[in-house]
Amino acid sequence: MTVTAEGFDMPLSGTPSRLLCDDGTEIALDVDRWADAAAGCDDWLLRHCAGPTVDLGCGPGRLLVALAARGIAALGVDGSAVSRVLCRRRSVAMVQADLFGPLPGEGSWSHVLLADGNLGIGGDPAALLTRAARLLARSGTVLVEADPRPEHAWRGTARVLCGGGAGEPIPWAAQGAVPLAVTAGRAGLRVTDVHLGARVFLELTGP
Image (cartoon, rainbow, N blue to C red):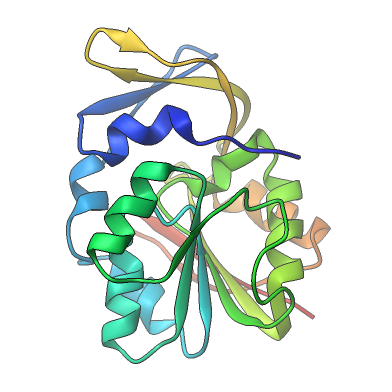
């Protein structure tokens, strides 16, 4: 599977944007949170990282900055050239790459982050979690943000809307905590912790 990220360059640059799904629903992209320092519910993710961490779809790198401040070795992965520039400005380690392609440290990471809706990347959560699991060392964890609607499950295509323009359709997906737990099991992962609130996170532990 190959994933392209050019459609997110404008939101990553801070342009107010929405994601238009092919079922007609629209999701506001929280571009201000992406560009800001880690805060609020992000702390749950950060507290669950105790060793080397790879952030898939890292965007401008706010979680990487916060992990570095805690003394945690971290690497961001994003397909966007805008993300690469912004991460360099923040002096955090990042590679511009397809997360389904070869990555540094395969099979050695303590934690994999999939925050800010990044479970949708590629439009196939099962494939993405399987890929994340392969990046982990034994008993490592995947920390994933779920859709806040517990039973929600959708796969299809979406377009990024910025101002009066719309990007090309890209494969995308969303899952709430209930279907996500099932998908995780298919990827060889089990749910070991959950955060419920305005944002919902699951900790998934590998074998």
